[in-house]
Amino acid sequence: MAKAVHRHEKSIALIGLMGAGKSTVGRRLAKRIGLPFVDADGEIEAAAGLSIAEIFERHGEAHFRDGERRVLARLIEGPPRVIATGGGAFMDPETRALILARCIAIWLDAEVETLAERVGRRDHRPLLRGKDPLALLNGLAEVRNPVYAEAHLRIRGGAVPHEQMVDRILAALAAR
Image 1 (tube, rainbow, N blue to C red):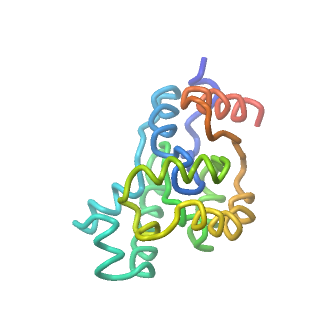
Image 2: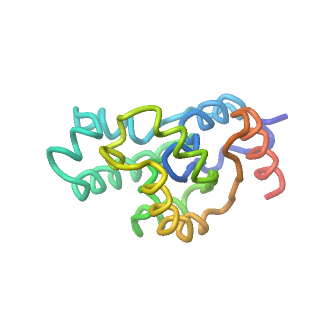
């Protein structure tokens, strides 16, 4: 039944702040609807031969965003799949336009406190290095949420099981 919900005409791009569950929920969603899953950050690392933290450290955020834009364009031009984007990808006007035109953009929206607790458990995110996760995420949410609101669908989640998030996405896709 789930496969009938999404007819595989377009890729699904998951957007949202760090810690929203784009990768974890994306893997489960892809499995449920029978599409391949790809994590854009992993593809960027593979293309660069460096971790995202190393790209930021050696070349800066602007260089990373340029590579991110190229990798996402390649992924979107390929066959339909579920794509977990990086938290800042949708902020780039060119990338956002491509996602909105060629994908179903789904904003995974969660309370900042929930996200801060999740991302505070690990220290692998360059934007978080040496910063208070809650303060940083509040600032990012203030800037990014109005842009994320341009997504085709908004799925409220956060402190709910990943399978419940997938159920919410499938219901929203079916109602679309």
